[in-house]
Image (cartoon, rainbow, N blue to C red; front, top):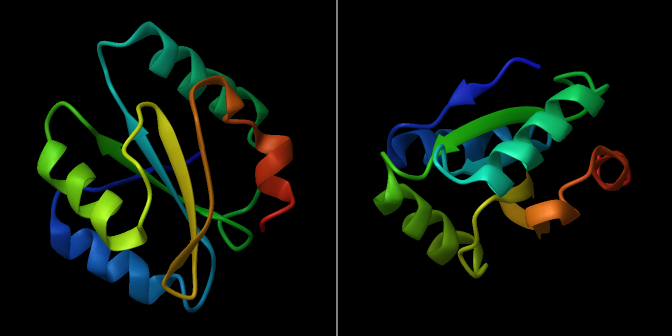
Length: 110
């Protein structure tokens, strides 16, 4: 699984543009939370989607809380951690948090 790191609001704007070509996944991850680590590890172990099906992006919440707040506002979702969003055609079409983060659910959105 090849994550693209999100480090600026500009990265989110570029991701929104990219989502008009292919669906994009945002993982909002807290590096100090055991549940977040469990969800991320489980996602990575089960990942069998190509980047063409769903392109993965990663946000370190502890370093970039401002970007997480921007994501919540931009896509109209409540902030949670860990959390995934699937962005397609500039809109969030799916989100899940904590142990509801599962690859089998993501396959249905891709």
